[in-house]
Length: 450
Image (cartoon, rainbow, N blue to C red):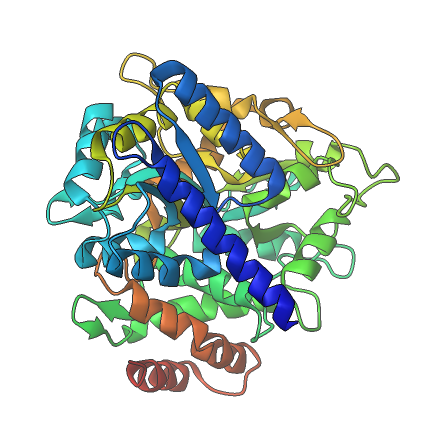
């Protein structure tokens, strides 16, 4: 293995050296991207080529593994050798702004020049730093309540936009084993359970962090969360459940509701052979997609406005950048080249910039016509009606994550990764402990995490 590691290290050094040679400080820039799959890199290179043709400025597209991005950026910052632009996840926005890795003023100026009100408010709100927008929101996706709108219509049920509506649908539609009301993840060591639970807690306005660090969970609101999760868990199939069972049971037509990421959208329509719907005998049929509704924002009794769990990516011009050219590249990628930016992976790149002042839905409409799928391709607008398309994107309006607004994303991430919440919630839904004891245990164990 050692020779391979040496070769890999040499390749990285070589790539960086080429980047340095090309970034001449006048017309060329370096761009780090975590979209490093070959087909996605090819699309980004085509965008760089189009930008050079339009402006004369060269862009070297440099792939970076997302797991290495933090350490690579820190090392480059220490060496005074940051790239000009970095495509990065939400988790780095505020820490990099504080550290000086990002040129906050340059990024904020771009957002203002593109008109802040053309962006999804949630994506802007999560990047606020000293009254400025620390990085430029590019794309994102929101977790979704996926539900059988045909069954809801037949039963006269409201869409699952609240705890109460979901519980009413469970009561009306749960009829195992032919139909389960929900498929709620309960496998403690799976990140899928962590992600769904954070969404459920956010929906009821419950968070374990404040600006000062750990914040004790409100007992009343947290018991509402616990009781809701027990309700949907009791209406789920038996066994250890995570993303795989959730998708399989829904695809078989045996679940009324699940919570999933938008990467299910093409699979629902029979466009991916490795994950075919089995609701009928044709694995390529769009039948299930036609019977499916989507909700991205739902609320609990203590938070009627609700929330959406979102994963958002940003462009960040760095403190070492050739600022004028970098700004021109980011602006191009968010305006003339924005549809191409979204086309890199449209099923997971919802437009956080919805349109222009004079055409407010321009990019949403363009995105909905981009082809999705693996073994077969079709635009989302051919698979889902206009109302569903709007709801898919609308989650970015209320996008949220624990710790972002409070500047405690790092602490919140440690709490989530500890799986304390998963474990104690599982004890509660399995009737091993009572509700008040569960809240007390959550507060004691989360409060000990630093």
